[in-house]
Length: 232
Length: 232
Image (cartoon, rainbow over all chains, first blue to last red; front, top):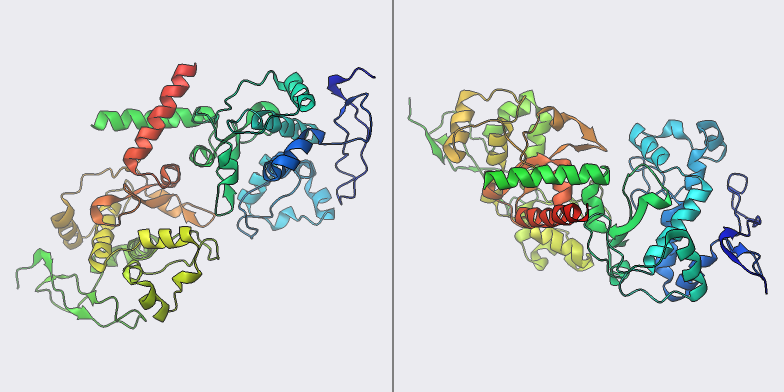
């Protein structure tokens, strides 16, 4: 049996049928020296079986730009691959995305959400690592836990909302309001999509943080509390 | 010349062509004993001329249920007169509003926003009273100022956001993001539409408050700040 390195990947190219196969080269992230077929997001396979909704959410949040759940001239197009948003306007036009047609705030939003392929992969891993530490989460298979811990450190449940700092509850992944889960992917700095900067947090907390960085948000609400206390 | 009472209204019925004329009886709110034509919302006439957008916003927020700026099965119908939402399901059906077709959260939202005609009128007055106290606002004509002050007390600018307690800026009424003004009508208790409970506040503050009451919001963010400080 081969000794597997949990932090270096196989890295073989996986053929893709996506219309973006020239922009995004899908790689195998199984440990180097693995047996069997290559697999890009193998560390989500267990969640895909026991908690499909959560696995799909991780893939969506890690790889796609979002916005409103609806598509409109005001909200802009939805669910574009983040690495695609690194292309310039000319290249995007060849893929049918006409930035010249979009309003400035839509362009800003889309460009803010651009991220390279490796950052997206790392975000998916980080979110998987967090998921297994949420109270009520399924138990991670040993191989996946070892792999994720090699990247982000030992599991230390309970996973907390990075904004309100209270423990999350796995049931919130399933409870949806208007089709939106009560746990969302949060960005400490809203304009940076990488593993160090993302976490799972409460929907209400994420909405309250808005477009502020987490530091800006804490500073803002500190001022509110100070003024509210002075008034009484 | 008749002596006008600034707190009692003419109260004559103003004929309406609205399809809801049987539900909502429009009354004249000019001071009792006024000369000339009756007028329901005469205290908004000056704003309608110098700042039409703000006057329209006051009418909309005072009298209509809102929600998303779009209409959909998920968001529910938009801009129903608040007094109409006091009718029971059977009466609503006669007006073409089928509550049985709506999702529970839409029904809750619409019913929460119901308010009687006099509450809506008082809200419109309160918002007009606040508007003239926002830094940068036009100067109120004397008759309107006297009328509004008789109801809500002397103007004491600057008008502040009831959530963050910082002064508002009249320019924010005109600055819109995605078609939404940066000042919104706030409710200290989100489920009660009356003059004592409404104010003008910053859009970001209103979004952060969400469906919490103002007291709940302060309690919530106090806890966040406490935990954030403990962590450092």
